[in-house]
Length: 115
Length: 118
Image (cartoon, one colour):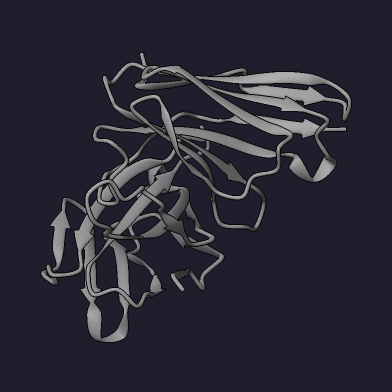
């Protein structure tokens, strides 16, 4: 079993749909992250949760709504997305509380296509 | 502002060749951390190494070695005797060290796609 599991692996949605991405970590970590990976662009940090509290919102549009019900689970709720939101969405976790020297453990991502 | 530049977009080598992936960073901080991650075709990024700005010793781990030079703001990664399994996208990343509670905000480069041909 991998340390960080993301579902679904692939998602196709229309601009008016509502969907959710799920991330689960089995490592006992305290911090969880959402990153967006678009073609030819650096990974972009979206959100950081430390001990279930959101500590970073990196100017992400409100059509992306994160939820962290406990330290093992992280969701990204999507609604009224745009085609430019198509990307690979990566979840990660780290052992500490989101300190800047922590190494991240990533999931395999959800490849999202918005039509 | 922080920035990480990986000028090599794609590199193709033949198995057993040595290859060096370049990483140049910009930061105003005196305390920071540098990372390398590997992203195989399966998608998940895998941590390879972390160095802090006060430790300039080069590091070797098997076929992997890293050359950290503060004078040129570079943190290059060399794979010796490359293998097909090394084919992946490699990311260099920079994280400034904040004080207690500062959030982890890694700044990634755009990555270098390494293709190792048999």
